[in-house]
Amino acid sequence: MQRTSADGVTVLWTSAPTPGPLTAQLSFGTGVRDETAPTMGVTRVIEALVMSTTGSRLHEFTSAVDTETTSFHAKGTPQDITDFLHTVCAVLSELPLHRTEHTARLLGIHGARIPQHQAAEPLSARYGPHATGLVTHHHPAMYHHITPDTVAAHAAAHFTRGNAVLALDGPPPPGLTLPLPDGPPPRRTAPPNRTPASWQHRPVTTASLLLTSGTGDPTADAAHHILRRRVEHTARDLRGISDHVTTHRFIRDRLTFDRVLLLDLLDDSAATAAEILWHETLRLTREGPAQDELDAFTAHHRATLNRTNGHWHSLERAITAEHFGIPHLDDRTLLERYAAITPHDVSTHLERALTDAVLVVPHQVFLQLRTLQATPLPNSDCWRLADQHPPTPGTHFRMHRLRRARTPRHEQGSYVLTPWGLVTRDANGDEHDIRFDQVALLTHDGPGRIVLTGCGCDMHVHPHQVARGDRLVATLDAAVPAHLARTTTP
Image (cartoon, rainbow, N blue to C red; front, side, top):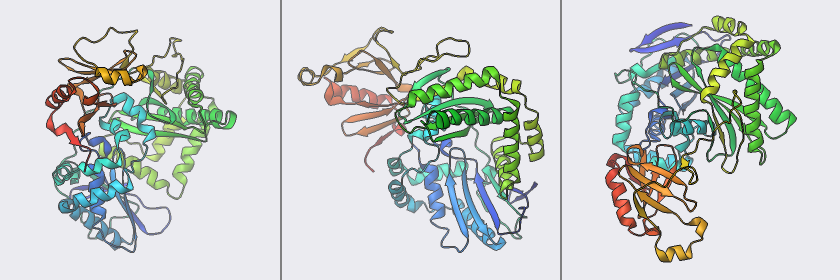
């Protein structure tokens, strides 16, 4: 792989194994994880603004926003590539901000279009509505709240030459220019892990397991490949409850990956699928893989790298390493490391990963699982059960007497106002906190409020349902900073 630069932008290239059109990928190390709850969708708006000004072209070109990166792709003659990249960079240097509202409206029609949505639910469970945990909170209506000022600030911070990498499957074209705004890569901090090893309910129709690994640990690749094959064999071939088992990798920081194994379910079998996920992970941890499973893993990756487009797998790894400071291994070294992995290595890796694993299942699914040490795997829930905790002290806001008389007992609820926040209490006495200093977003929904809490739950506060409800909403409005508030209407 060759390395050079153009206008201060890092350029990585390697020759394609067969002659053909030149392919280019201009990548920026920014994606959904760099947004906040109030600015969700801004990266997609920037991408759309750029693509709306590239004009009609005879060659292939496209773009994409994912969790960690935003990229612009083109395939054609060297001159096609030069023209396309120059246009993209020029537009990013002077975005057509006057088209923000129009672009946001169109994006709201087409939808959020963020990949790996279901696979990211364990990240929301772990981090709440922050960093990679934001993926599950993307929805079409969010684009209406993006303003030109938000777009300009986000572009200035993230779409710069210091945060860009160009990859090519051939030598850089003569006269290539990348006139991007100057600026360094953004400084990121890893979001705090808010959950221990546990199983959790989330609004999903899948079963998924999150395990962490080091970014420079090839053993993790082998462990998750073999685990996926085993889970797929049991869930699909033996039990017939899932036809789709996938693995997904998210970057927590330059030293840590969050890896998710996801099962799409064919019927009402989430509990069975979750048990398969967990038990197969424990079995692989205790016994380790067979040598033929390790050999098959190495052979699979060798075949991947030897395919016609195998050079792009190498380029993609190099791009990720460049953006996030992740250790990078060339193809030969990586395959040597894979071939040297032992069953004990896999067991050791998984034993470490299980210490903070998160298993996610749909609501109304209840599990009784045990850890590697044979202790019960706890259910981590943001609701406090009435029979396990005393009621929170504070100012109690109950339903109006007339409303209580007309509302079934199991639907009755109340609020408790405290110095630090608001507590929602259901008919059973179970409680959920809305801590003022952890509110990620406050949406005005008529007289009521929808609060995106620090755990990632959307809590609805209805002032007309309780006595003195206006006071409750006024206190909430005063406690939450104005930049975290918005309305439901465009």
